[in-house]
Length: 118
Length: 118
Image (cartoon, rainbow over all chains, first blue to last red; front, side, top):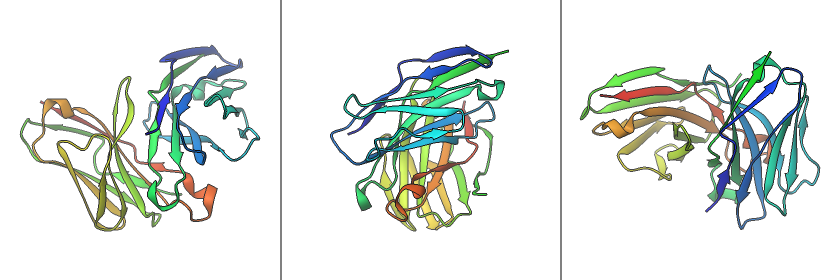
């Protein structure tokens, strides 16, 4: 079974600064995907960034980037130039890519509440 | 835009009532999921469905059942609501893994139903 751990229940950052959210996972499989999802106060879960395990290059999406360390099973999210709209709960998540048997089931971490202060 | 719609944002029910939570998606996704979100626990998978009339138990299925009579609709049923089922319930949908590989790994979420059982 796969597990995902987020050890930071809460984080805060000043507007325009950079913050890094941590995530570790455990799996014996080699083929999987990792995600960061954002859940703002509106409760609408939104995909922030996706990383394919077979790709060595770290994914980036505008101000969001990841540090994917496959051997260490670590997947952190860096938010640069933080904005007030980044205030949300952030979830790290994992999908096993096992062809027809994983069905896209997501395993989530506990979540990190990020507050961006003006 | 993909839309996943949950029938209620807030629901209050009495202990012992039969409760139906409805979810509809408009993207012809094969997979549909019901998650439960609790503070400090992240999202946990209750049930999922990978095709019409097909269902599989997730990590915490006890006290719940599901129904998927049509591809676009996935219902979560609490046969006899109890206070420990007070929670946020999130529905999600996604394409079958393997179709067009990476781009179809994203799950789309509804806005959640906050259920209180009194």
